[in-house]
Image (cartoon, helix red, strand yellow):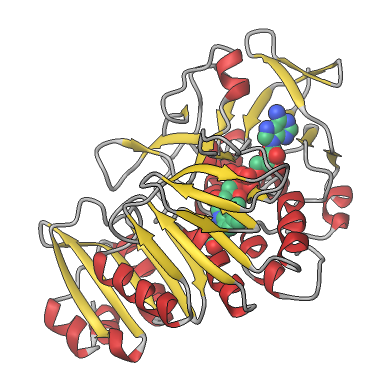
Length: 403
Ligand code: FAD
């Protein structure tokens, strides 16, 4: 009988392989990924990679770690099918048996179903291959349209504007980063981007990408045409659930797992961007797309598979983004908040929004205030709620220490 097969060697899959060994798991580990590289940090693809002259990827860990830990890493291979009941999967026509299989397949960028989506010069960013293509097109592009005002789109918009391109962002909603941050932060980010020369159109979607073979303009739903020799679509990503669906595993906006990351099929687990899990802070299941979520779920599951614990997963979620000179950091989940207190001053470019629900601190969004973020991680994990006065006068840290 095989050991563990991990499908996908992104942040979750790679962490799981290493954590399994750290937890003392001794059976075979096969780590299979359809990307050709050794596992690398994905966030820099929309940040340092596009900015810098250096085209190298940041490896998640050195190659030696896979060899030294007897992790059978198979890059450039796609798992085509899994048979959960008979416990094998098919890779390149070969059947690989497993005792446990973990789906760490990540997410796939959403594409608008509009005419011209297949033109050269229209990109979405998920992988190193995508990033290399975007960087190469960026070298000669003069006018860039970014479809979607989310983190990835805005990171790219800021980089393109700093490189002297004309940049237009089309956002279908009424504010930037609407799903992730408070309106105060959206307004601040908009002002900074506008100051950097980025033109943001709200309430606007792309209706068609125009051009003969290569894109030269974007037509909006309202009929405007914006000249563009390059388009980057950043309208979110869908969980990669293809294998799970085909195997008859329950899927509902992500691969459905319990608090130990187990899917509806015994012996099959899912972690990271592809998994929808019951969240301890909310009364419902959610899916999160972040490095923290993928790596913490991997570490948690390693303990479950190695027989070290059967605890539910309860990590505090956090996320970051670098847009122009702004370091945005989010901890906790603010969507159910009913009250907010601001620390610092947006005018000075550094502030944090503390979110409360029924009097309890549940989340903090911050711009250039890393101390609030780091303290927030500890406070939310501990269930500590500071008084609003302490937040505004900056003494939260002292009171938390005394607590
Ligand atoms: P992934 O890292 O996507 O790995 C999944 C892997 O599985 C992929 O390599 C995929 O090709 C492979 N795969 C899928 N199906 C198969 C198959 N059938 N067989 C073999 N292999 C398969 N998060 C942050 O917290 N902060 C950031 O600043 C940030 N910036 C980001 C910037 C960009 C450009 C992108 C794309 C993401 C960013 N994220 C950021 C999100 C973060 O990278 C993801 O949440 C994280 O990578 C999720 O890890 P994962 O292991 O679930 O999936």
